[in-house]
Image (tube, rainbow, N blue to C red; front, side, top):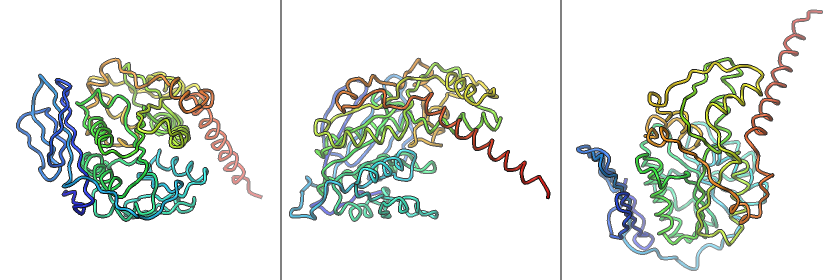
Length: 398
């Protein structure tokens, strides 16, 4: 997909990252995301190239992007209010919480949504404006940015798409347009430790996008996330209540899940804090949990045992389990090589003391997984009880 902007609007930025020697160099190249993993398999070559080669000895990754000329901020432009924000990926688990929070705090919210059979009416019902565009079609992007001050980017590709279409090509196009049109702040959500795992395509693309955003010169905040509490409901809570099989694993991996409502709240605190501009923040929940611990907690709160099928991590590679907790990799599990990350004792967590201090947030106000799941089970069990009571009443014939 050619990323063509009018010559005077195109931005240029290049990033080369070689994991084997940590050297960085800057050259001009066509927009590309290249990684060496396996010989002989050249994949697609368009303006974004992805090449894979076999090499067990070294991992080398090259990410670069360029347009034709340096960005030009065209002035005078449309005056914008600091409260005008565009949320990209607004229908997802995190995106919808960002929209809700923004509206509650008095922002003018515009949501970039792909044309879809089921329109995102709930966003309009909440009071947001919905505009249609598609990151994989760069020519649709500029119109959505007119009059926008801040972009909050929670987007990711659909399961059926190649990861690079939205998560690399689309994001580069969006960042280039934002730079060219004078967007004043860009918030990007990434994955914790993405810089440490070049063998996982999505994590590597997130890291490349972080670097590309940094090199673009746009005022920005990058927020790395560990995992969403919301992902645990469908994964464990519902199957346990329905007495269906729950997939467990013997992996020692621990994840510090966070409630997406807390992520949204902290994001807006960070957005208003000038000290945070240009910073990389990591948001992690109060404690990191293994799969076994999460299942045990759900069993206790549900008051019933789970039908657990434990699969050794070497067989399942735990990919499906972990990736579901990231909204942007939902159902993309089969395409991710998380095996190497997860057979080791990995902790997806980060100390939050400095972040809380920087944002003037009290750690006690962050929802714990116990509290989150307890609220869920209390509500759901009460509803189930009410439904049973109603069905008994309807059995009485007068």
